Image (tube, rainbow, N blue to C red):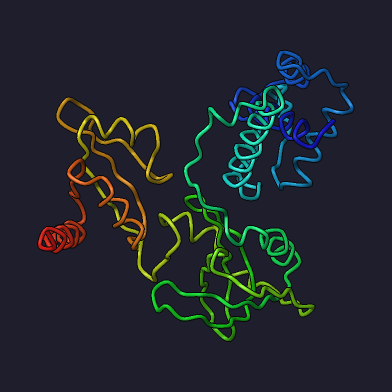
Length: 299
């Protein structure tokens, strides 16, 4: 079976188990059969072991409930794993459509007409990060307009809004920096390795923010009021994993998120224009108001 087929099988197994109903071995097998996968008990057991070994997702058996469950507390990066499955399965569906008919691309529109510059670096960056090997590259800054060479201890690969980034600690610095791989040139994976600092966890930092920039500030309670129409989009595509609904009626859709305020949060709020109002914190409302005032004065 192709790698895509195996990943699809993993997805179905995770779907069944993650519903929290403690499915039995037989019910998982039946679920696979219902979706076109007839496999033996040994293959299913091997799948569960491979999901644990390859992706760090701990699938345990609860004898009292006679079924399986995901041990989220002891699993590694479950959000990243589920996002990975989503991307791979989308690619498989597109691939199947293209196989069925060469005209399929005439009916598919992608978000960008540009190429994914720097994507060829993704594989060596993943390997360097996995093997804790230092890397060097030249990076072009959009803000300064200048290019600079860096030596980096890579900790994490991050995808955000269709772009890929490498997160690590450059040179003698002690804090993380994020570099877009579309602005990287002359990548070199060095033979020199490093020992990751166990006290530094970029994945945890990213759970506290929207986007890429994590300022050295505390998490704040942000309350936003959307129009009912815009609220429908916010409910189906939350701004952050911490999002909670506070009010949902004919007047407004009010939500709260707990994040470290950063540049991307402000950009996300501005993106919704007149459809959103910041209620808390007051300083953020004032900053958004000042930005909108300066924007108005440009016209």
